[in-house]
Amino acid sequence: MMNETPPSTSEAPRLEVDDVIVVDKKRVRTAIGGTVVGNFMEWFDFGIYGYLAVTLTAVFASDLPAPWGLLVTLLGFAISFLVRPFGGFVLGPLGDRIGRQKVLFLTMAMMAAATALIGILPTSAQIGLWAIVPLYLLKMVQGFSTGGEYAGATTYVSEFSPDRRRGFWSSWLDVGSYVGFAAGAGVVAITTAIATSVSGPDAMTDYGWRIPFLLAIPLGIVAIWFRLRIPETPSFEQTHAAEAAQEIDKDDPMARQGLGGIVRHHWRALLIAIALVAATNTAGYALTSYMPVYLEKEVGVSNVMSAVATVPVLLLMSAMLPIFGRLSDKVGRKPIYVMAAGSALVLLVPAFLIMQIGEIWAVMVALVLAAVPVAFYASIAASTLPALFPTASRFGAMAIAYNVSVSLFGGTTPLFSQALIDATGNTLMPAFYIMFFAALGLVALLAMPETAQRPLLGSVPTVETPAEAEALVERQDEDPLIDTSTMPLELRRS
Image (cartoon, one colour):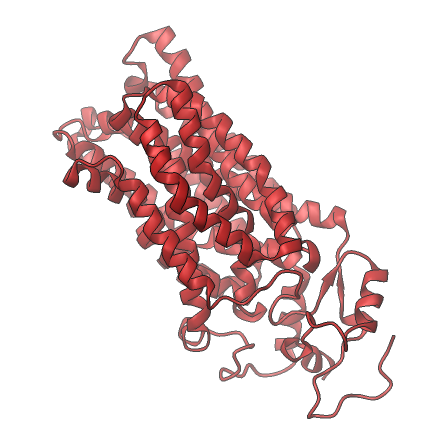
């Protein structure tokens, strides 16, 4: 259906069939798959570092007394997150200017190289405490690259997903995250078992710790190959073409903005996203990156047994993410967030209490309880957060909100949790830490708009078939989910 007369300046522009983006399932699968590998690699490193934290303490901080050695090692994890905002501030606006695909290729290459190089570092037995310096530097490179990775990946998958199934398709991004972490944990467990059986109990500190990091070389090559194959998102291409036809208006919140403009125009959405990211990632990083340390130090479970308990729980949780993502397409994102925060408030204290029993069955039950809120949170993060910002500035805005929050609250969860336990002697402190941010997330939900089934802000609708596009155009006047005033229609036709 084509409009025969243009709308008046007082009316919102009307959609035409040619305006609607049509992406078939095969192209969506290619795009999502090429993005997921980056998150797999990022969390593969988290899994390695988390499950080797105690071993790495003996490798890089053997000259320091307890508990300072472990805290110095965990500080390396925290440092990578403290650098993330700087990566986001550079790579986010760059992704809005030159494209999502190009920046995602760059972040993948940096991340894989830094992970592999950790595997050849000198140890404290060779150069003393100076050994921690190159480790910190490589963790900073990882942090800089991941500053653009998740923000870019969520932007990419949300823009490539059809509006009515964005929750389902975007949820696969975090499936890659947790499967990657499980893979890292599994590699550590297998390496430990083989190395210690061959070379004795000191094998992991002697050489075995290097093997999981060096596996990033073949994995990185495969991931980079996938990144080269993914196309640019249609939403970015349309918005970029529209910008080229007219000078960017920095006073227009829908136009591409720098860091200052994003904060000025979108500060409310940034605060909402920061709160939700904090709630999601304190729970997520406690379950993944901190749990190996907690189980080994506070419960007395070996890293092999910890991995044996954690890996199946993470795989089961990962399998649930697309189910919850699809559910959010039907009931909305906000109800899923309520279930996430509510389950965190109810289940985490019992989970940490059960964990203290120390038996393998108790650890697995506790991990399942702790995984419930993470599953709800992670299933909708990639579809909800990017939708809060307009297409022209989405990568940059996501880079600010996600990286500031995950750096201050999420990535520092292992360090703060262990420090709180050391300061108070209370092994439930990690649960209380997560519950605080869950309550904060509930407050943020009061101001968050519902975005399920709607076109992304600043983009035209995205559907899976031409017939769906025609039906959408026909019903646009009656459809409350369609708001053409935020779409780049007139600019594109000028």
